[in-house]
Every structure is written in C-alpha cells, then in structure tokens.
Image (cartoon, rainbow, N blue to C red; front, side, top):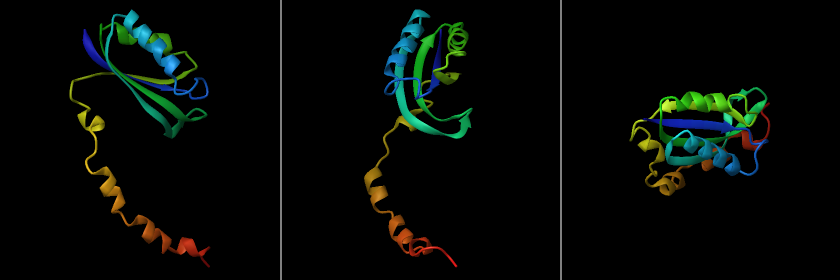
Length: 132
C-alpha cells in the first residue's frame, strides 16, 4: 500500500453547501477500496486562473490516504464521468511535503496592519476621477 494525495474540484452548482454530502460518498468509496484516510481538508470555494469549460469557480477537497496501488485507477474511473466532479488529481504523497502549506503564518495580523497600501491608494490619481 502506498500513500496518495487526492484532490477533487467540485462544481458548486451541483452540490449543496460546501459539498459535505459528496465528501461523505467519496470517503465511503475510498474505504470500500481499502483505503485508510489520514487527512481530509476542504480548501474553500476558489476562482480558477483559467476556466474549466464554462465554470469559473470550484470547491476544492483534499484527501491523504494510504491505499492499494490499484485504487487510484478505480477512483479516476468512477468519477471521470461524474458531472459534479470538474477535476481529479491523484499524486504520490510523502509525509512532510506540504508542511509549509498548512503551517500557521506567524504575526499575520501585525504584518497586514503595518502595510500603508490604503494611504497610497487614496492619494492615487484614480481617486480624483478620470484622467484627461
């Protein structure tokens, strides 16, 4: 058995809320395949850099599971034609590879509070009206 990271991008128009019910079906299917799920993370609704067809936003669900080598192909086969799933990504996972992603940022509030961006923006020409 190997450890994999599975990323699902769901169509927000086809699920209720944040897709918790669909998440439960994915977890049940992974367990049916013999997977041991070690992490489930909802990354929120995000806007795509490039649209997927006519879709401009998606709900990101991330799973880390230890499963047999045949399971990734079975997962892709089951969800490849599902209209709710916009994209599936399955990758080999090594412990510690995403520690920076989930680590809390130190001094986040003070870093943002000290930034003088708004003062500079208020003095910009755009605040006085159109250029001539």
